[in-house]
Image (tube, rainbow, N blue to C red; front, side, top):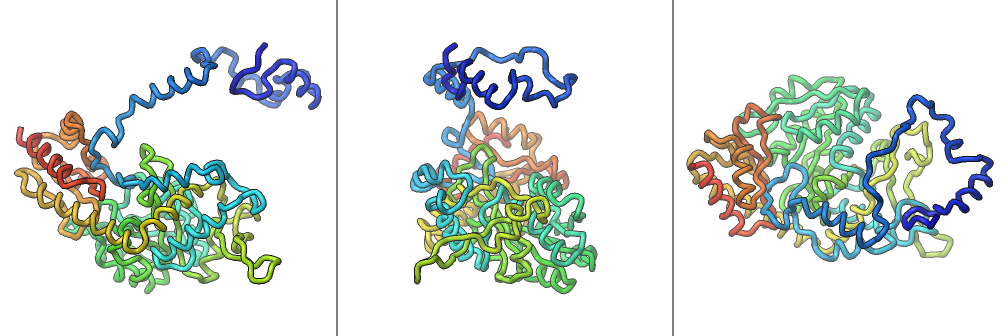
Length: 460
């Protein structure tokens, strides 16, 4: 039997030698602990293997070609994964062997990764204006859930107040992560502005509230202008205030730390990370340099450390005993594989952009969203935006039309456009509405093309 091109040690002779060395007569002996009744006895319905690398590559490319991407279509979907421009240098650095293949390890085998993540933490700390930033984690929802668990461990309380306008997907991630330790209580919003109903917040907050969590900008796109009031209400009850933020907004919007956030969380996807069909993103968590908060962070933090050479510094773990790597099963939370590569990409992106670049990015997004509002609001039967509030890069569009959002989106697809997210399932009170997204990648002509297509569709 010839060796399999993709399976190491596949020669029968080699397999027999390996089995003899470990003291078993067959591969089946290795699975003897598995009950017979749950073992699959038949043959799997799989096609014949492709043993030629060329054939395999061609086959996989054929499958991928079935996807319609934002390279061929105009995309106005956001809601947590947004169409942003990824500078070529982000991909170039990410593909370097020391980053592309690096998983974990120690300084002697991890050349450059720890320093790259230290630089990421430093750049993010400057962007959110907080002292301590963790290495990247899976997602915004993961970071928010961790922040809530941190609050619970700090003050011993068991309830968290969150806005009803939170992303439905993010809510499920958070709920799954904090259950059963914490109870999530949704706070109503003002139907005119979309912002948190402060009266409802004050009714629901109590001495059992571990944290108040809100997002700015919100999932529905509006800017929460009363962030300080929300944080003050939380602090008056001894609760911790957690704010979720889109980092692409921080070149033009005040960071949450300036209006009272104790912990800031968010997603790294706008900072040079591809959309990846809605997955493979990266979250971040930031807080103050206070032992009470830092000791409750379960993720790795890289800092500077003195070496054996006078005046020379290296990069090492900060309070490593906090983590599950050190405490294992006794850890407060378990943390395994994270999204370190996306932290390195974000560091490259922020280094490239600098403060001026982030300001220009935010300004460009604001200009495009305002131009879209201007055009869409002129269309008969279209209300844009739904809420009377300032918006950043997303806003709710309501259609007074016999066609549903789903039908409108199908018509837009025929014109090579991905329309907004249908909100009816999770926000039925908003009526026939969709969430549209506008970023720096959308030109004036792109927005005019969308407006023209919507006008034709709703007018039929």
